[in-house]
Structures are given as structure tokens and as C-alpha cells.
Image (cartoon, rainbow, N blue to C red):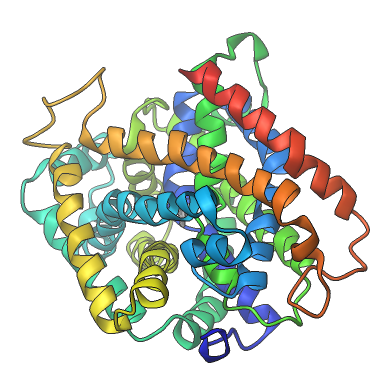
Length: 443
Ligand code: PHE
């Protein structure tokens, strides 16, 4: 079986595809609003701490497990050890369903905003009115669902044809354009009158404000943004040939993802303060702030449209990796044809996303502990299941599979990796203990 798997063409292609999975709505939509809700700079610093101590190591663990086993997460744990470890892969497949169901709803928002920016939304220069327009849109019972359906349809169509060629090519061209646009928007945002308060909010931490919920949110975001804890990077690693250096790839992908999240913070938070929005506004923050920024730059409608198109593409490349975990499992382990697997999984995910979308409108009054359906799905997946998956992936790499993962010539990590012992110690002790401690504190 393993010999028939498609592989990424080049080292750059793989890094771009893995970065395409990591860079997405997590960076541009989720990171700024979580930072806004959780004290700004404090959140940023805790988040960076988690990326360095845990994120990088778990990323390498996932790449290594995937490349060594050449299988989907369930098959990989089965091939390398078996027994109860297989359940870790199973939880990852389950996470693919949950995360993509609400991810696609927000992906739909970006598509809608590309359309709306092109058709006159930004002509109204009043920041507050632009903010309210977003509330009206997501509260509508039908319109966001159409865009959710569209987003899922594209995801299904691309993944049904196989991941490699398409994703590699799309990422290579569009990611650099998105990057340049982010730089331009950061500059505009930090130079708005009144932006200084936002810059201070994002860079000057007040560690007396730290609490357990904040630390859990930062940990969950580190996993979510790096696409870790559910086997997405195991799956991508499984499409990798033995030539690519895994530690180097993990460092590249982690750095790129972190850089773009920090840039998104600089793009959104200063503007939030400049326009007098509430940094704790929640999931809508990016969508109410960016149109106001675009209304303040020459050619705003053009740049707004371009930006939301690129953000939709970044969201799609992440969505491919989410559904690919499910599809690779169905193809490898259940013998289902790729096309059928993509269509079936995509349909179920679309249905599962409907209550998430409605929870911003007609179903907003159905809440548990102040969380609507969307929040609950996000919380369960990002703050509980991904970190829990991270514990088991670390333990597995550090204690169980370490010798196999290092085996040169068998797709293992190259012998020249001098930090192998440190990496192993992080996988064995540091990451599992830190994650478990954070989870317990958060509850
Ligand atoms: N990392 C993606 C983003 O930041 C989301 C994602 C999470 C993708 C988990 C795959 C797995 O948008």
C-alpha cells in the first residue's frame, strides 16, 4: 500500500503545504480575537511560550510518525505499535469532523466578505455601521449557510481529486501575495490615529491578570494554529519522501505560522482601538475591524476584495488538511474510494456545521454555561481534544516509537539531528506534564 501513496514533489512544496495547513483562519481570525478577549500582550507571551516549548516538538513528532509509517493517523499508530494507541488516531479523525464543521462556517464568512467587498460594502466609510453589518449577516438564518455550503463544496471537490499537485501549486503562488498584503495592512493599522493604545495592549503584558482560562486558551490556540494534536501533520508527513529534513521543516512551518499570527495581531488590534471597537468582541472581531481599515485606504474595495479572497484560500488550504485526515483514514483503513470518502465526509461535516452557523442568530439563546453551539464545538476540539492528543503524541514519540522514528534509511529523522536527545526529553516529560497541568488548571 505504502508504495502507491502520492508524494509531495519537493521540499519547498511540502513546507508550503504544511504551512498552508497551519496558516489559516486560526492566525487571522482566531488569534486576534482570543488575544483581544484575554488581555492582549499576556496572551501573546503565553502563546509564544507554548509554541517554543511544546508546539515545535509536537510538530516534529507528527511529521516523524507520519513519514515513518506512511499512513493516516489511525493506521500510523497501528503500524508503529498498535493496542490502545490506535485510539489517539481515532480521536484525531473525530476532531477532523468537529473542527471543520465550524471552521467551514467561518470560511464561508470570508467568501461572503470577498463578495460583499467587491459589491459596495466598503463604500460606507462609517466604522460602526460596518461593524453592525457583520452582525446582521451572521445572524441571518440562510445567507451564511449558502457560503458554508460553497466552502465545503470546494473543499470536497479538491480533496476528492487528491491533495498534492493542486495544493502545492496554489500555496506557492498565493501565500506570498497574502504575506505582502498583511504587511501593508499592518502598516496602515499601526499608523491610524489612536492606534498607540492598541499597540500597547498587544505588547505590554500585565502578568497580574493571568488566569487558568487564559492559559488554556493560549495552549488550545497554539495547537489549533499549528494544526497539531489531531494527526493533520501525521497525514501530511505520510506523503513525504525520505529526502526532506524533518527538524528543518518543523522549524520553518512553526516560524511562518507564528509570524503570521503576530502580524495579524498588529493588523487588527491597533485598528480596534483606533476605531473604538471592543477588543473582547469575540469571533466577529476581525470581520468588523478589517472593513473599517479598508474604508481608510485608497482603493479599499479592491484591496478588501483581494484580502478576503486570499484569506478564503488560506482557509481552504487548512480545510483540505482537516478533511484529508478523515479521507485518508477512510481510504487506507476502510478501503473506501477517495471520491466517495470525500463526498460522504464532506456532507456529514456540512450538516454538523449548520447548528454552529445558526448559533449566531436564531439559535443564539441555546447556551450551556454561556457558550453557544459554535463555542462548545470550538472549546471541545481546540481546548480539550487537541491538547489531549498532543499529550499522547508526545508520549508516543518519546517513549514508544523513538528508536523507530530515528531509524535512518527507513524514513526516520536523519542522524545529523543533534538535538534528538533534547527533543526526546521534551516529548517524554516537558510537553505531557505542561499540557496536563494546563488542562487540569483550566477545568
Ligand atoms: N491551523 C489551521 C488554522 O490556523 C486550522 C487547523 C487546525 C487545521 C487543526 C488542521 C488541523 O487555520
